[in-house]
Length: 326
Image 1 (cartoon, helix red, strand yellow):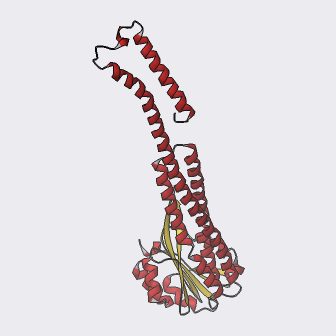
Image 2 (image 1 turned 135 degrees about the vertical axis):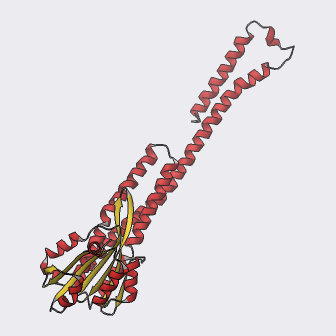
Image 3 (image 1 turned 180 degrees about the horizontal axis):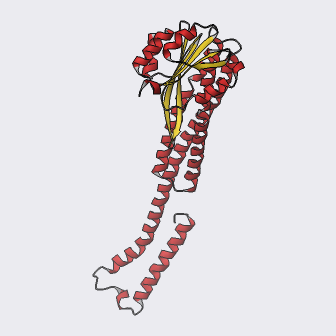
């Protein structure tokens, strides 16, 4: 991937309005202007590009390393006058939840977002900010809110799709025979729900810290926006927790239904085995080579034995039917 593809956008803003797209080498010149700030969007950048951005803004080595390798859990850290925020992103692709990572550097005069893996483009976020100059004028703190809000909102349809899958599984469990595939699907769905929860739940602490402690880079009038993100995270977290509990119950119910189904099969086999035992026993008796058996010389012995055997089988069948074994 060449540098042009890795740098999705590099734009300068002043007083809440877009100035122009710039090259990375122009950043120092733009930052020399009063009230201007730069918003750079990177996608899977190389180490060389990250080092170049680091030189322009004076980013901390540890934060740059984390942003390049993208192996962090969602978190919030402060390096001098720079906020470093890690978010996990998610996309639903072919009914599978794929996760990515976004690392955001926020300074007094810049915002650098670094995307890795599965993630929607942040072009809608930029357009939303540019269409609200009075909010964009609040500076990099508002851009951070806009990105976080967009990432969290993208979890909403994923959680909705998982809830639909759960309802489908519940219908399938009770309307069809419990099968191993259903158990596998429940386990797979539970794993996806837990993955979403692990990605979202740490954002509760991140939003709380941003709303309370990051007063230097997050202006007072911007902090309520992070409480709004916090509310969305709480809603998603509660939904995933409810689904987790329901899936645990569904797994137990499905296993119980499998056991009940097996017991029903065993009962039917035992019932038919008992019915077949009657003619088997009669046939085995008459299969013996005894010379003196009174019935052998009676003209109606054969029909009588067949009739008695049939009556006994029917009587046992009706008894087992009433007992719901058949």
